[in-house]
Image (cartoon, rainbow, N blue to C red; front, side, top):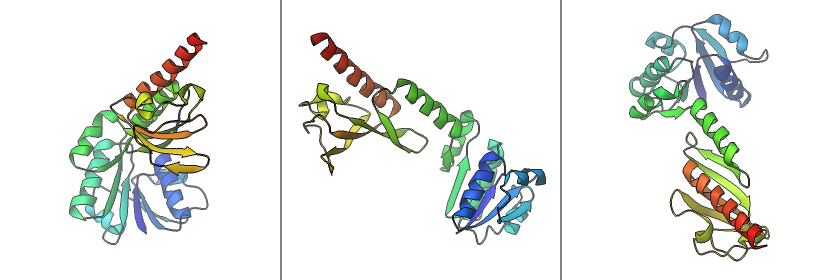
Length: 224
């Protein structure tokens, strides 16, 4: 693939290097030549000094032959303009935008752009880790709005159903592994100790799941 990375800060340099190591052609564009020092010494992609908000700079970067563009500068308004040009003017098949300030994120979404918001995602992941005691996040979709959680079924939940464990909203059973064999479960699937459950949930759904797991454990302790 031919890919353009606009912005060569820490994120842009890491992204460009990963693309290069993946065997693709990459052009890195930045208005500051000093920013190219962020790239590893063995990077062999093409470097272009210039402001990518100008169409002539994008043309010199090869946008008319490119397969994708990532706008990852630290200025949201710049990323938005560049992404708009790449998407609507040059009709690139794949355009991804870094969202620097989460307050600006909804503006990207209005233009139907693919957005990655490290600050929003990172804050949510930290919040989840603070809550999580018995589950593990194995996949994050979008910017973390929906994630897959994995956890083992212990003795307290043996013989109960998914419907007893999961909140009715914002949480769905995805897979159940028993003795090394995975199946697609339903709400009425009976759980066994040692099963490994995989569920999809929003952040609120994951909180409710934790409360359910912890509440069950506390009830069993009191009964014991």
